[in-house]
Length: 110
Image 1 (tube, one colour):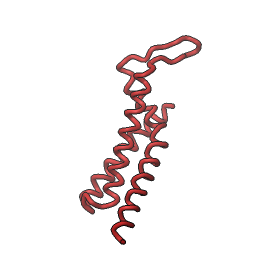
Image 2 (tube, one colour):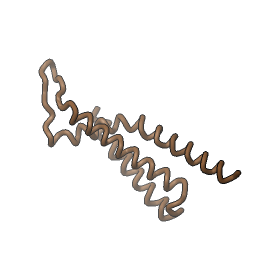
Image 3 (spheres, helix red, strand yellow):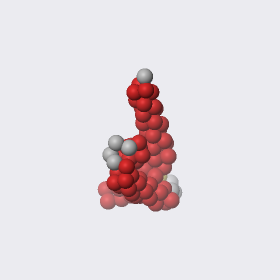
Image 4 (cartoon, one colour):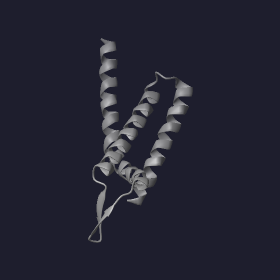
């Protein structure tokens, strides 16, 4: 589970770097720039979902005894959950954006 803690910040950093590079190179209305912005929004949604799950039930069972997650540790737990959830939320968000972009380009071609 600790690997998911490092995967999420790396994904956010890579998406943010890609967004900045593509925004400067191709402009705001380019497909790549908008797709990286959709990726950043999906990553934020996965973090919000992870934080919501941790705040909803801040207890876990550790070797048979129930432990409480303090507020100062909930952010790191949310980052670990977001590292797992991003593999479901980001592809769904990009698929929805790709479908919307396809419909928009198809309507413009007619």
